[in-house]
Length: 498
Image (cartoon, rainbow, N blue to C red; front, top):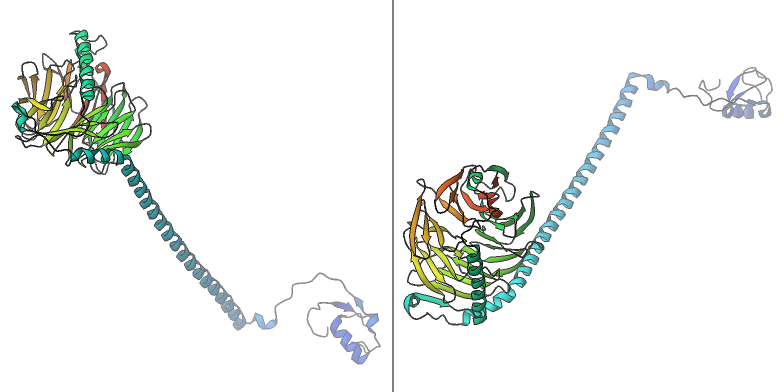
């Protein structure tokens, strides 16, 4: 009653029955000793406390005016803006911290990548240390031309290691293979697919994800002789890929070449593959380990051809440096290197005869040269093509040699009579990139602008596939010609069967 405000600690006076704020009434009694309403005597002990729940205090009357409301709103707006400004400052600081953290992460990733690259290079250098040591000794031996006959124009760079024991090993293997071939005679294996069934083959599968799409093209193909479900490809993306046909999945992707991979070979009995590239190296890979176990540095220019000897221990390679080389795959050492100085021409391809004592090379000036491995001499030449020879293939029967060049033709040669007995003329501008006989020597597949399969002896066409959208770079027969596979510049691996 004294302040006209709602009391915080109310109490009642029994004298006047009025409600007062205890603080104010006690002060009044102390000064006057009487009730302020009727003036009768009153003491503090007489006051009676009233217990109430604390009410919400009404705003001061000054706050109900329009200027006061506007001021309250202004204060509230200022507070909100200050809070927003603080949040923005904190956001900017957080962004800067995040940017710094990302920069540090990126720098760390770059350092890790560089260190990984250095470790890989160090491992490769370590892997090639032993063969390189062998090559240094080998190159110290003076080249000596063979005397007599065609050998006068040959330069034989005799690397240490082409010893009588190796020559005897090659001879023994050839004797066994020749005997086996004679036993097989002229009978065709019962499991071999018949011509009428082969002519019904259609594309049954295609795989395009084996190699990089950014550098399109599969350039080489081979099948594992002991398990033709395992497919080996070399790509323009510098990678070598092992693919399982049955499981339809990649078994291994082998990285190491610094340029495209133009030749690949699958070892017949070991989980090992070989590859060659224009980077001048031949690499030996472990499929199970997924790593390079040997680097053979036999050439000083692009390696153009690769062929594995029947023993499974030696590699034949040809190169644009005009040499062919014979190397030991276990040590990586070059056993011998030979060039025909009279020809003075780059070699474009190379292939062992099934017996392994002779082999053929193709040249950039359209020659096919037959060489004797034991004597390291050129024993026969087959002229007739126009343009660089692109592919050569020996038949398993040991008598036929098929060759292709940039003249849109395939020529068949009889090794007994040393003459061309058949020329298959293809369409104009047909590019022959791959030639392969099946294991029985019954069929010949040609890969290039399209795929064609011929039956030997009649040399009539039994199949023609045009599914590839790019040039076909490789063809291969499955066991007993149960299927046919191909690769092309369209980055696809295709399979054909019934």
